[in-house]
Image 1 (tube, rainbow, N blue to C red):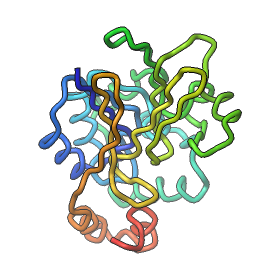
Image 2: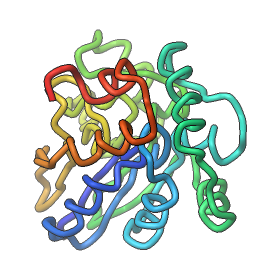
Image 3: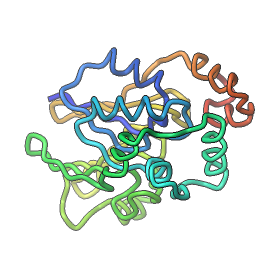
Image 4: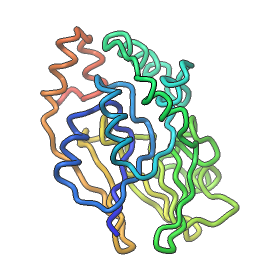
Length: 230
């Protein structure tokens, strides 16, 4: 079984469309943050609804669908989030809003006898935890490892891909398909035959950047999302 693992699409329809065209998979897992930052929340939610077999709630999904403050982000990115909603006039359809509202905070799966826990941020704080894999191992353990054993814990939120093994649990982050940090290349994960691979997606960011410029989004915000070298 070939499992496609995606996270933090954030309304980036360009990367989502390209991924669906080029990647073959048997099952899709989405780790949340389908909306915000990007110009196409409805379209991307619809694509996730139609293609993802399993999905959990992200902090931005929670905020937009329930009309509440956005947890789990810095003041700077929270302000960017609200500004972009105004620039793009976000309004989810009732069906898409209800889909998000019914997503679980966490989900447990058994795939071919592999016990998997899915969450957006961390099992301890599903919407506002922040765990990077270069943190002290005790911090990661305290946030991620559960009393019940899981073979794999899948999470997103940080927009940084990687994996680490702690107490026979492999903790995997596929990175961000929409707005990655670091080298700015969108990433996703493939889990197949017991192996996890992080893959990079090449796409034409200028096509999406032009949408921001057409909506008069300030250059500072564009640079925060796409980087200065684009």
